[in-house]
Length: 141
Image (cartoon, rainbow, N blue to C red; front, side, top):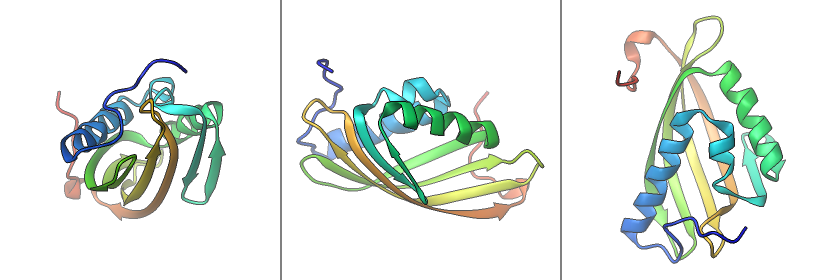
């Protein structure tokens, strides 16, 4: 991996916000290959109770995730940052295959390498059933 993935650490508040927005945009694409490219080849993840290592595991995880989470829509917000770390709060909404709507919310801690790729991602997530009328996020068509 030789190309840089801007913005690069050390992060300022402005560049940390840019990194968060880029992540939000990528995840809302629901394209596992696109999302996986933001991580180091040997990235380390904890997502809920699942532990993943490397891009192939991340991509497979995202394929499974978005196969069950229909009409997925995510919003990430910067919580804090240091030189090469960013903490975010997030909420996303999705519908399962039975038609039940959910709001998932939580926190992520990210650590980046010098080239701007995410080397570590630790996510704590909770799910809350909602009715469709309670949705906050809708696709703009």
